[in-house]
Image (cartoon, rainbow, N blue to C red):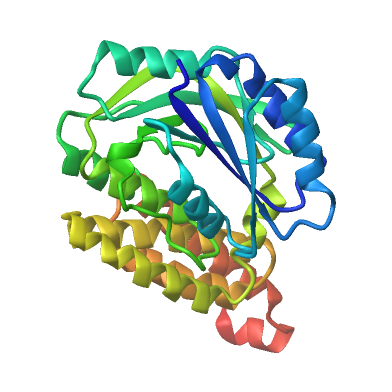
Length: 312
């Protein structure tokens, strides 16, 4: 049963794409097409993908693109997807054998479901970390979407979700954002999805901690404002502004943490102020307070002796 369109955005992924495609090979019987968006790669990504797909009997289509944007590349493939179910995975992640069949089995068991969320394993800098099991979802669409945005429900990973093409419809990833574009996409889907969970891990989510943090250090204020503008558009699918403000606080706290760790205390303080003003859970409130104390201590230690005496 060829039921799934697989979407893979790729930029200079020649070193990883063969393993990603090989990890899907065992479930080729369910896959009607693999849409690989080659986003101006210069390292032979497309050729590596064609060779790997042929070895695994995967029906690969390479879509040339000039997006230089993961969201834009995914959108191009979503416009082309032809099968009832869509499975998105990144070009450096790994699918786990039997994961796709488990997701499809749940879809068959619960025919009203149009979004199936599986567990996934995080692998940070090459080291396996904990398995993230989905939990906290309910039958109420907007409740799920709001809780997801606020961080009350565990995040999903691109590669841990099977979504029906009917559910996706005209929904697309926001483009031009440096971070969190997938969260906004999933939140839109959740706001109208009949969602079910499976406890089985279906993929390995590869994370580079340094690359992830780097996103927050280039033009952080402009990028945050661009992201916040897009976040606020989620009100049009019924997600309350209070949930969106809570999300702003979570992201601002993450940016503050990165700048604190890298020694830019002024920028850390700027984003910490945003995080402190946002609605938050007790755990985030405590983290904000802890970073305020740490910032004050580091600033005091960096004062010249004469200013230190005045401060004391």
